[in-house]
Image (tube, rainbow over all chains, first blue to last red):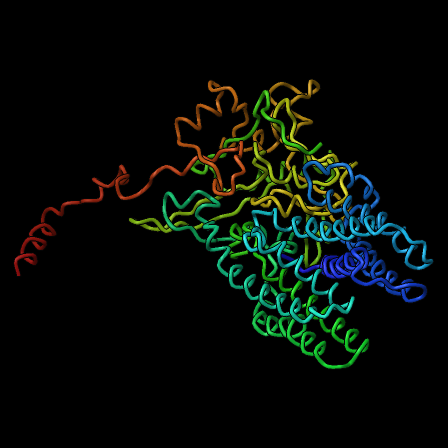
Length: 290
Length: 242
């Protein structure tokens, strides 16, 4: 799949933002005054920046409001609702923190739970796609949620944040291990795609078109897979191991900031791989395995 | 709502005969011509060095290595299969993508499409292409603007690809009717689904290429076994004995 920067930024930034908002809403961190203004601002900034980035992926964003209509069937529509409801519900909680209004904690906790639900709906947009076997697995939402929880725990300075970061590493290793065998397990070949396996072994004789098209650009992405092994080590080190070690050092707020920046960079690398390594079965018609 | 209908009154679709298709691309051209005039199918840089365009129908060609005899060439048209369990419909966040309850045709309401591309991702068959000029998704409409069009002569009330096919490799009809031409073709010739493992339950069916091979020798073969006579025959016999 084509690793479009808009979608990578959307899922990583909003994932980290909603993760952090979840911790703020839950009350894991209860800042007041200016501190509350900046921390809530950071959470909202990340989440909204991510959502804004996603609109750059749209060919026809004029109709964006219509995306709220199909929540009964579409995960993308549910994601739109979950993000807007979460941001609306947490707004009074944020204001209460900043101005010391003493809003009941229950509202914040509901918002915090909804923030994680939002991340889950984001993950399900990809998980539901059966035509991309690497994504079509329960580990996909586990990975998205582990990033959100670890990122939120890091930003909110939880003492167990290093463990959450290491858990992200473990989940990434599992995702890669399972993902590498997913296409084979789906058992789709050019033979099943054309039905010609009944008569023999088909191979591409002549392409359907000599130049590129939307399908090839969007779903049959092959550039950069040769660096996948290197990128996996980079993603693992930046998203998990390094920030976990830095948090163990007595660096205070600066340690948290550095760990969060490294973690975000690692998350971007991991998300790039999530798209670039994903093979779509339509590639079979073109003689590519994705 | 982009919920799929429980059942459709008709199940309109195509049968594509891989035995008679010769890969002439006439269906590709006819489809492009009709739908470009209708919904619009843009091209980018069509006469330049890196041409690209939106098509609803593509014809691939494959070489099939068979157990006995030389490899066979199969030309393979690929377009929307109007699946009963269409994954492209349920993923749509705006309701632009839908399957009609009356005849099972899967369509895009372009006025509601946001061009997110998720339906194209959900389709295993590559049946949907985003028109980069219009920013909305395009797909086969089964020529819904021809098949019900009273202003066209009756013989033209079928999809452009079917109407144009010079070898009659494409057939249009109602699969819900067991006596329809398409249903009988599927029954007689062993019509099958593409990627049944994807659970899409396609309406369109493909007919397999008929068996070819050493059994079907040329009717001229006996004439090739020429017996030499006269001096040549004597030489043939003498040389054969040495």
